[in-house]
Image 1 (cartoon, rainbow, N blue to C red):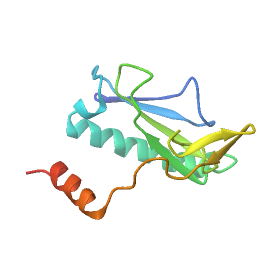
Image 2 (cartoon, rainbow, N blue to C red):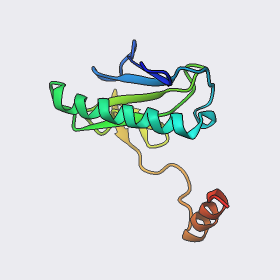
Image 3 (tube, helix red, strand yellow):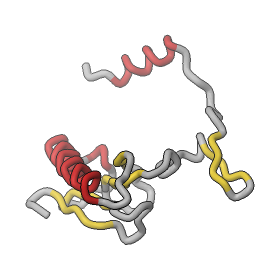
Image 4 (cartoon, rainbow, N blue to C red):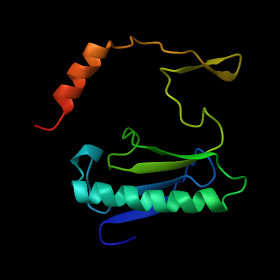
Length: 126
């Protein structure tokens, strides 16, 4: 914990070593976090994630970072040690068949290059 953020272990870890980084100030949506605090959250999460990669056994293959925002009305960055490709999944890519998680491929329209360019232009800073 410092004057801007707090990091703590998840009570409901997706994998052992899952932790959260949250702003100390109550902010509901991650996109409402001031840039300086969001950047600080990411730097601290990355620092702790590097420690986790070195110290957790079995060693995670990757560290995932997720901002999903549906479970708690307080912005939070979740950092998850990843041992399998399905540790962080979207129901738009995966399904459960015969008790196993399976990749169902893209279940939504793939945009054209011109659609991607138009979206990028709309999102670009002026």
